[in-house]
Structures are given as C-alpha cells and as structure tokens.
Length: 278
Image (cartoon, rainbow, N blue to C red):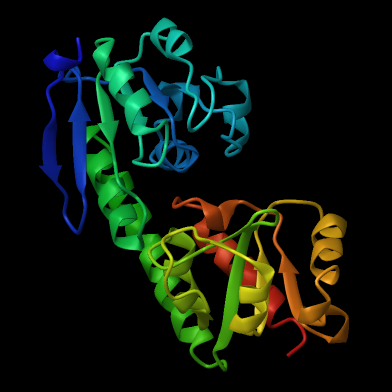
C-alpha cells in the first residue's frame, strides 16, 4: 500500500538531496535496476557494473549495457519486469520514470533511491553518495576529482576565446530548447558559450519567430537526428539564413545530454568542432 511507504530525505555534500522510497535496502546491495542512463554510466564508472541487472532501453554506454535486460523507458518503466529481476535497489533521478510510476515501484515493496543530478554540483553529490552507500568511496573520489580537474582545464582553455551566444535545440517539431536550470545550460559557460534562452523553464518550447529574434551566433543541434535531416531542417527556416554562414553544429553523441562520466569527453569534442577553423 502507498500509505506504508517510508520517505527519508538524506542530505548530500554539495546540493540537492537523496530521497528513499519504500523499504530500507539491505546493507549489501548486490542487484540494482537503474532507471536513468546517466546513473547507469556512473555505476559502471564506479566499478559496479556487475551489480546492474536492469536498465532502460535508452542506456547506450558502456557496451556491456546492451546485454543487460531492459525494463522500459523513462516515463514507462515496466513494473513486472522490474519486480521479476528482484533488485535490492531501484535507482532513479527526478525526471526518470515519473513520480507516480516511481511511487508504484516503491509500493510493490522495492527500495527506490532518487538522486537529483540536474546540475554539476548535484552530479558531484550523486557520485559521492553512491560511492559511500555502495562502498566505492575511493572510486567516487577519484572520478569526481578527475572530472572536476578536467572541467577546470576546459574552462581555462575556453576563456581565451570570444564568447558566443548559443541556442541548444533538443527537438525540431515542436522546437524544444535547453533553458536555464537544465544540465546542458550549466555546461555552456564552461566552454565560453552564453545561452540565448534566459527564461521559460528548463526545456521550453519556442516558435521559429522567437528563435530568429534571439539571434544566436551558434545553434547546437542535439536532437540526435541524422546530419542530413538536421541540416535540412535548419535550411528550411529561411529567416535564419543558414545558407549564408549561420553556424549549426549537429551533435550525434548523447554524452552532453547525460550528467555522467562521459560529459568531459563530450565537451572536448564540442570544443574541437567549435575551434577547428580557428
């Protein structure tokens, strides 16, 4: 019954909080179902991949996840599949699974841990928390230290360049963009980019007329569509004058969309593209 669910908020080191739903997990967690691809990647980076027994269909990294049973998607995790895997822990983030479905999973008697990871500070906290809770303290410390060091180096490198006003597109029809408070937005300043979207929520929908008014110097297409399809879409918007030199970078790697261990490599690749002609 949902009335029997115990909710326990645990403070994290930097910001945000971990939330427990359902019964207390066992002291030794051996079977984990991850409902967030980003947290799946963190688990593998912490050398916990052997304990991951279920992932969503959106999990793409590392290669080993392709052999792990799938339990649905973000908003439609399959309850029967999850229960059948007999996990000691179900790991989620606030945007994965949806609040109602997460509560249902906990109501079935499974321990659910919800870890915020929407900002860089929350990512560091989530890694630290998982390291402490799953007895991988050293691995967690090494991972955060390495990522923070690399990120600081990227900031220094990018600061030598002239800032550009950028728009990050996550969908074409409707036009969905990265707004303030999104994880992608928090990364832009690290590579000397300024988000032209300053309000409207985390992932606002905008019309093409508004897009033109924002006058971005650069469009980052993170829709994960093909190069041809993406360029065809932008060229179909004559007001942007794409054919006259407006920069559009089509990114095929989902590393920058996931608050996890691959984001540094994603940023390095983006910087190489941004500066390849300079």
